[in-house]
Image (cartoon, rainbow over all chains, first blue to last red; front, side, top):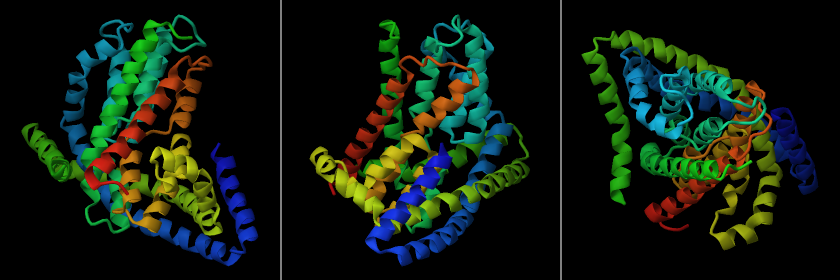
Length: 193
Length: 178
């Protein structure tokens, strides 16, 4: 998809630019933007390394596993169809915790394993089960509490206080997730196809 | 609303305290772990550099050509009636499709208006509470060959819409309307 999107963006830009007579600006933009990507990455190298370093401590000390364990009662409410002590719970909680902490690379493998486990419990193999819909909707409602990359981008563009958006971000993230869960619980009851 | 801003500045120090405190209690080799994790972070960022170059160039061309303003101005009559900032419209749609392309547009807005402007703050919060719905859905469902996704898309779009509206509302509440 990105292949079409990326090519499309440039071609549209070239056509509109030619019509507006801004081909020189386009040349400059292409050169400046590629340079900017590198300066941005230098800022991000520092901030993201700091964050992943801190998260490694949380992982090694067992803090992340401990938090996953605390999710168990919530997960039993969200996924009543999954048998108690099923391994699906483990992968789902790892995926949620990793998403909450913004560890995207840890979230995706756990998420795919969770889908595999949910599929093994699914009576029909081509239609999503209730648990799958719930899992996917929560996953896509955005769980990440501290969006470190947004903070890094804000810092790069000289924000006076890059972290001022953390608390508003948390509040809105919680609201969107609650909306997703409520929708799901209602849709489940109506046996929506 | 000052409390919200204050809380924002407390969260990262609190996370440090919690994680280091727990690590201390569990007797983890903290500095070594930090270095190990920081290395992972470095390779992650180095890995996304090519994507960033590609997409920032594409967005840069789109911006310089005037196409982004064209889209924003085209949609403006509708969005102003809804109280939605027209500059954020291309980003809002891109956000649901591609994470890296939307990052390109986000950075473009930061560059043009500044991260501390009304637009800059709104999109920062909006990006924090939304997700790449279409991409995630296709990856996850394709991995287990599910074709009938039932109400998943509706639910995910609704959750994201609630996030976007909440972000707009909270930006106005804290920083005042544009």
